[in-house]
Length: 279
Image 1 (cartoon, rainbow, N blue to C red):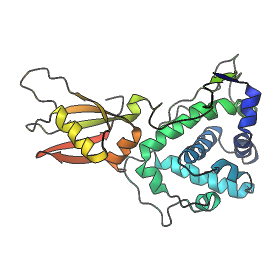
Image 2 (spheres, one colour; image 1 turned 45 degrees about the horizontal axis):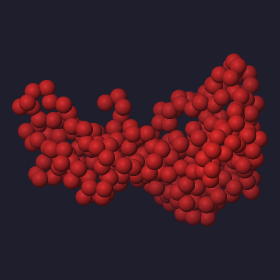
Image 3 (cartoon, rainbow, N blue to C red; image 1 turned 180 degrees about the vertical axis):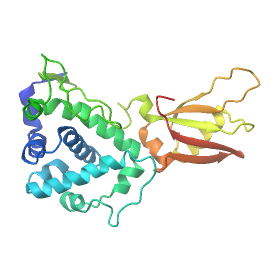
Image 4 (spheres, helix red, strand yellow; image 1 turned 135 degrees about the horizontal axis):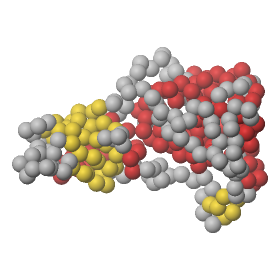
């Protein structure tokens, strides 16, 4: 394990800290939204949009504000339950110009759950650790700080991205050598984030094997486990099931931006949607 001090961490993320400071101090944007805006840009870097945050440093504050508004629009789009109408041009014209690569809201919507997991990861593993002192300065007088209790950032818990824990006194961190912030979308994703909920028609029993066959035909070896409804009587058929996928990307491949997707196998219908832990 490699020990990283707070000062080293801040130096490593100097560019991220500079841009975040401009968002919350110069532009007086809301801290919670600004944390998520940075998390969006960091996730885009994971998606091979190179040096997104670094490209923000050369922008005038007025332009940075516009690009941040577009990132906030992406965040808002991930709360939609149905696929919205995409503005002509993709909805992110300034972002496309700044990063030098075409990007649109459709990319976020078709990769909705991959985006949510990736942004949530950036929020909790990076943003929660590197902006503490800046947040303390901005929140002074508005957020009660007691000892090393987590900072209270208005806007969290977020309806999509949940809560974030930001300790008032950041501590040194240990990381595996060579993996300071490495994140592989195929791992480190909570099981619930890559689980789907299925419903079946009464009178048309679907088997666990048929469920696995259906999704394997769509996106290859993507099924970890199929958990069928437990039958209270031997004569009853399962009417719903949970399917745990290997990656959250598979969930997006199956739903294609829809809230509910309908499939048919062996003459029987299956309705699929993203699993909600309340179910």
